[in-house]
Amino acid sequence: MASAFLRRKSMQTFVGSRRSRSAGVGPLPQSRFFPPLETAMLPPGTFRGRAALITGGGTGLGRAMTAVLSQLGAQCVIVSRKLEVLQKTAEEISGQTGNPVHALQLDVRDPEAVARCVQRVESLTGLPDVIVNNAAGNFVCPSENLSANAWKSIADIVLNGTAFVTLELGKRLVRSQKGAAFLAITTIYAESGSGFVVPSAAAKAGVEALYKSLAAEWGRYGLRFNVIQPGPIRTKGAFSRLDPTGEFEAGALSRIPAGRLGRASELANLASYLCSDYASWMSGSVVRFDGGEYAMMAGEFNELRKVTPEQWKLMEKMIRSTKGS
Image (cartoon, rainbow, N blue to C red; front, top):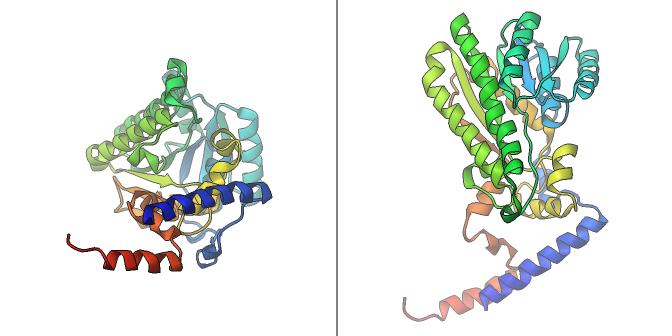
């Protein structure tokens, strides 16, 4: 009977989420306890005199991280395949912060292009003090429908692209005896795996292994490597590919104890901290940033939150009446 209650309640929740989507999804009531603070948390000038390279820096999370690093004094270089988008972002952020933001076109899947771009970065700003590997690609697809090209496209951008940028810059930093902070943006399912985004899950897990490995090997050269695993954060590009119907957002809210999606500016604050001297003793760390979503999904009995007080009374009565073990 208890399982029947849960099944019925789950169906009601699913139907309700579909209806709420058509009416517009908003944060849940408990989100008032978890208000986002979107102003820069670090002191002004934290990155003054330093340079930062951000892949995928023209839009979404990359743009948000670039804005905060620039606000805190960094001279930023943003790279991606879409030069026009990069140039617009660079002009806007530089105009707001007064610090230079350089835009360079780069396809991270091409190691020779990465080497040329890094050479250009070095001539513009010197070797960067902060490197954020944020460029990514993803889409939802049943694994039985995946083509070899689809797999290769995601693996090349996410895993190979991160490796090419990291190794090219890392080798130059080692030779120059210059320290730096590397940061990679992955996802909570890099740890658990997930159906329907299998290429991304595998590639992101590889990025995490890469960064933990280099944290151990290259720490002696003054290089730090950390990872952020974001939960659901609304960005235009990602949600258009991963949530085309809007159903995912409604379902995600029901899984997040904080009752709301994350904000790009919140992630940017965490990223700036991890790349700053305030976190100089952090390396090889993977930080989950998801409003409690992973913990909610991982707990076998967490679905019991859907049981009403009246249903609990009935279930407790049934449990007390049970004889034996």
